Length: 75
Image (cartoon, rainbow, N blue to C red; front, side, top):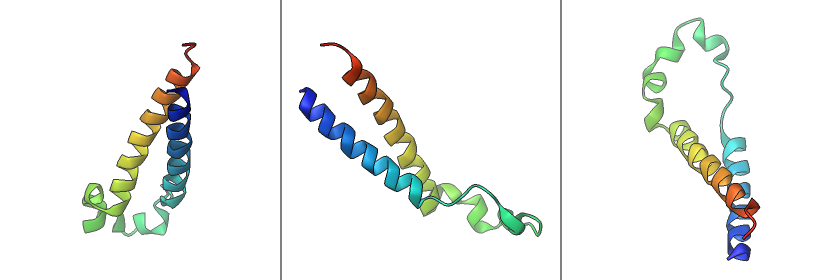
């Protein structure tokens, strides 16, 4: 069981690293001056690819924490 959890943990770590590196930065840049952040893409961010990457990141981070706690238990 511990070996299986370790393999899943490694896969989650790799996936989390790739997903975080694939995301864009949070800075709005000069587009926020002209109001471009309130465009169609700014309002519908949850439906975009960036919104999906953020959602996946949250689930992978929760999985990372849970698996870490389980692997550190002495059973």
